[in-house]
Length: 337
Image 1 (cartoon, rainbow, N blue to C red):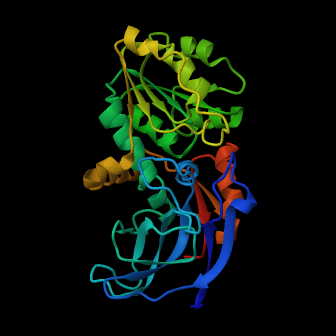
Image 2 (cartoon, one colour):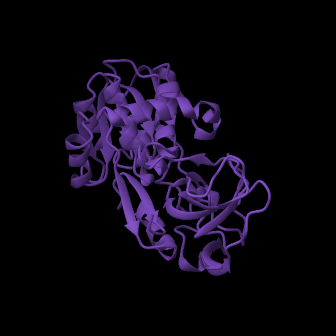
Image 3 (cartoon, one colour):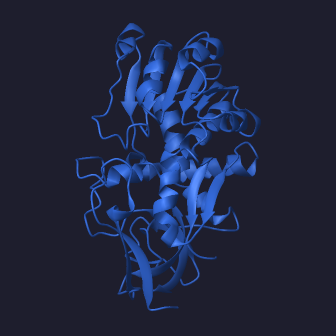
């Protein structure tokens, strides 16, 4: 094992899309674990839209990444040295390891991953934060009932594709909104959605009148902006709107665009609720158990978009999210298993 590694540190607060000068690519010591610590070789990193928000200085649900700090990222890896009683050399683990090749951790927030149950990248997606977000956001906040219509934006992405599949398992009619004919076809053919709307090539309001003629009972929003506004015009009585993300707004240099059609919430006695997966940490086990069962039963399909580029490919790979190039969970392979 080398005594040095590579890291990406935040060099500047981005304005708009992150650019190369916003990062410092540095060589740093690997580090040795002290008492109660473990050293993890990072194998895969999760790339998520939320990372763009973590780079801003403003108040949010989690503290911002500071200038000069290793970029925050969830990863999965292998324990290569340990002085922690709960982790042994050879264990596969997941945690907030950062954009680097090795991480010294005190074990907080670190969980074991069994590659015999599922490939390691799945622990960053369907059996990780992505799946947990979809599970709790839809079930706890969306509260779908069999026969109701669930609409999901960003439906071909990591969270959206799982939301739609869970809704189908629960007996709902599911309509996905995505960008491009290829993604829309995938929603129906691979993920089992009832219908898909291409927001780039279709009038979303008109398509919703066709695919959700009785209104939208649950809307799971990952994109915000114009798509959110369009869906608000089609809410059913008592609808639940889950605000999970707003990827259409993250790189805007203008103030975030709020919903012009929010009065639809009043007219339809509907609710709009934000959700952050960290609020459900004491119930993660419950969700992972259920998601794993659905995967094993073949009722849930996990799709990972894995870029094999090493840690040096992080800046370019992150931009795939904001160009809408990924299908399913975007993962960066850092090292061979």
